[in-house]
Structure formats: structure tokens, C-alpha cells
Image 1 (cartoon, protein in one colour):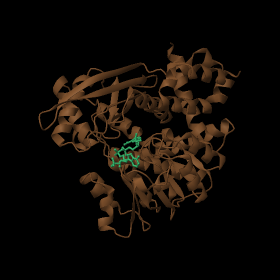
Image 2: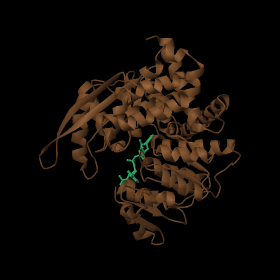
Image 3: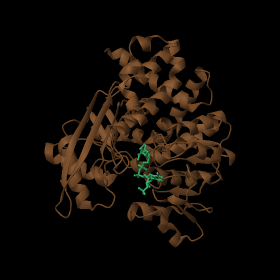
Image 4: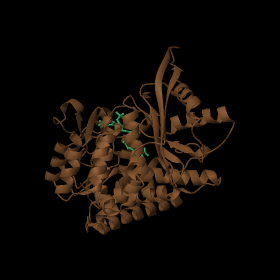
Length: 451
Ligand code: NDP
């Protein structure tokens, strides 16, 4: 049996396989790493894979808080510190009812490789809670964030672990979390990124993931000889931070983004998504996308219950480039088939692990350009690291400077992956290229640092 298969078998029979989503992520990475593990015995000798898939530590704690009706509520809080071979633990906090240890482990594991790929000095971690900010008043969100930070503050620090936002954690939540940390510790330090600009945030952080994803895709199209976004029709899922800023940058580069979606339905606007309206509905009112057609009656709104069975409406719409930017496993085998049949040339994962394994298999079999999440959405963590640097030096960088640095980082990240794929005989396979390049940097650091 080859070294890589031996390792995969060992992991299948370990605790790791009991968390389905986590195991799916690990398995996908290990499949890509076969040529590295089989050709270089040093990684097996140092048990790098076993060490990499085991978090350094996991915290799970009670978060008790009071709602506006003076009822005491209890949620579960988590922080997983996965790997700090390259720098302080770094990764978002997610507040969503679906949060559990398995999901956070999958996200944290992916985060190690993503952060490694950026070339910046950051390790991997992830955290959050099963608390749902949706439908809560600002005071309820504030009381929850204070209670959550009462425990979290024990584990984080500017050189230890620097969380950021993720689903359900935006500038509002980060502001409340930061305020509570300051109150508990009397210390004004960069312990979180994604902070509002007025107290140490980076100007470009809200835009970073979406903009970065478009820069990456632009570079990937170039390597494939399909240069430029001009007049390309793009399909985007999601209507949150990532989706909105992906749409914005696509417009900047001359593309036509025609879809967006939320947890209740999909908008298809063949003239191009009305971005100011989308921002008003989702960022200001925090309302349902259904409101879009009250203003733009030519657009089509499809409710989730009317989606194709086993698929998502967004991927039924013909497009040149697709940007799944909502959540995990939102793009199925059926969706991949529809995209391919409709002539789609590239898929860029704005969300974390949005494509199912069947979908990825179909993309590869049909030579569709596929930018995996750990590469395509690394713009967010890149600008988070810029925020850490600014906080450490008590300096402020301009919007233009940050955008330039983000673009440069995303384009060079794409180049590194492209060249790694060529080195390992899989040119054009950005998934294998990203997994190998991300793994090698962190694995070599682990070896150099000893056990
Ligand atoms: P937000 O919470 O801002 O937005 C998520 C959006 O997706 C919401 O509009 C939500 O709908 C929608 N959504 C949720 N589930 C579904 C579904 N099943 N079908 C369609 N739409 C759905 O999150 P972000 O935009 O920040 O994050 C999106 C993804 O990107 C996540 O996977 C996250 O981990 C990843 N990511 C985010 C980064 C960032 O910087 N924000 C960085 C790297 C990765 P509704 O409005 O109804 O809730």
C-alpha cells in the first residue's frame, strides 16, 4: 500500500471520521497530497498529517445571557486553536444555529492551509456559537457578545489567537466583543480583526473576501488564456458580505453579475443585480431578498421551496463564471451538471466548501477552472493580517494602499498555486495546487520547530 493510502486508512479508522464535514475536508486534502506524501518520506516520519488534523486545543463553554424580556438564555460557545506553526491562531467566529464542533473543525482545518497559502505569518483557528443573531435586537446581540467574551478573553491575545468575523459576526458583533474585552482587561489591543475603522479596523476588511475572490479568478482566467471579465455573465449565490463585494468588484471589472440568493430564495436579474438596492435590503434593513422585486419587478424571485430537487436555483441560470458565496455544500452534483451544460467556464468558491465532492469531481472531469475556497476566499484573512500589522504598529493604511496590497497578494497566491500544480504534473488543477502549496509551507515549519 502506498504511504498516502496507508495514512488515509489510518485516519478513516480514527476519531476524525466521526465528524462528517470535517472528514470530508480532510479526505479532499489528502487526495491532493498523495504525490507529496508518496514522494517525500519526511512527512510520514514526522507524522505531519496526524498532527495537522488534530487541533492544538478546543474550548467549549456555556454562554448565559438575558433577552429583552428578561428571560435567561443559554448557548454554547467554542474556540478551536488548530495550528500555530506559522503565527498566532487566526480564523473567524461564526454565530449560527448550525455551529458545532464538527463544522468548526472543518473550518479550522481549512483555515490552516488557507492562511499558509497567503504567505503571511498566521496560524489557523476557528470559533463561534450556536447563537443566532437573526431577529435579535442590538441590545440582545450586545448582551450575548459580552457573555461570550467573558469566557473567550481567557484564550486570545494579539500574539496568541486573533479571531475575526464570519457568518453572523459582522462589524456590529466585533464592536461589542472588542468593547467587552477592553472592559474586562483594561487593555486596548488588536485581539480581533474586522473592527470598525474608528477603533483600529482596516478600511478594506468588509470588501476583502469578495474583491480578493474576483482578483484571484481574473488571474486564473489569464493563465487559462481566457483573460478578462468584460461582459462576462456571472452567477453569485449568497447576499451577505462576500456575495455583495464579489458583485461590486465584478462590476468594477466590467462583468455582469445577474444573481444573488439568501436562505429563503434567489433573485435573477438579467439586466444585472441592482447593487445599491441589494445593499439597502441586506446591509441596512437586514430583510429578505424577496423585497428586491418590489422595486425591480422585471427581476425573477424563486423561493427555496421551488428550487430544483437536490439543487439550487442560482446554478440553473446560464453564466460564464460562478461564485458560490453563501455556505457549505450549497452546490451539488446536479448544480455542477447544470453549470457545465450551460457553458460555465470557472467556479470560484467565495464561501467555505460550498461545492460537494460530486460537484468538484464533475468540474475536474470537464476541465472547468475550479478555484477552491482556501485560495479563492483568502482575501479576507489577508486583509485581517494587514489589520494586525497596523494595530501592532499603531498605524493606518489608506484604502488604495490596502486594495493594491490585496490585489498583489491574491495574484501572487494564484501564481504560486498555478506553478505548484505544474511542478506536480497537474497543471490547471487549482485544488491540488492549493492543497500542496498550503500543506508544504506549514508542514515544513512544523518539522523545523520540532515535536
Ligand atoms: P453573511 O452572514 O454575511 O452572509 C451569508 C449569506 O448567505 C446570507 O445572505 C444568507 O442568507 C445566505 N445563505 C445562508 N445559507 C444559504 C443557503 N443555504 N442558500 C442561499 N443563501 C444562503 O456571511 P459571509 O458573506 O461573511 O460568509 C459567506 C461564506 O463565506 C461563509 O461560508 C463564510 O465562512 C465564508 N467566508 C467569509 C469570509 C468573510 O470575510 N466574511 C472570509 C472567508 C470565507 P440570509 O441573509 O437569509 O441569512
